[in-house]
Image 1 (tube, rainbow, N blue to C red):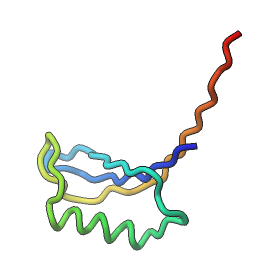
Image 2 (image 1 turned 45 degrees about the horizontal axis):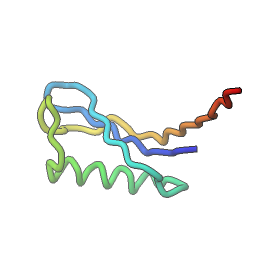
Image 3 (image 1 turned 135 degrees about the vertical axis):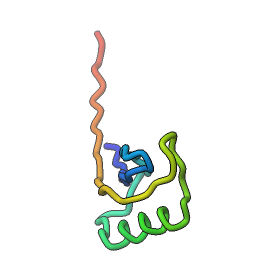
Amino acid sequence: MAKKIELIFKNEIGRNVTISLDDPIEPVDPGKVALVMDLVLAQQAFVSSGGFLVSKVGARVVERNVDPIQMA
C-alpha cells in the first residue's frame, strides 16, 4: 500500500495543479494542511505552466494497492 497526500491548487489561468507528497503523517490534520497550502500560496513557492498558484481547491489522501500477478 502506497499512500500520498495530494494538495490541489488553482493556477493563474484557472487550471488545477496537484502537488503530491509521499507517506503523509496520519491521521491527517486538516488545519495543518490548510496552513501549509496557505504558506505555499503566500510564498509563491511553485509556478506551473499556467502561472503561479493562486488559490486552494482541496486536499486528499490517495491510497494505491498493487497486487502482482504470478506467471506460471
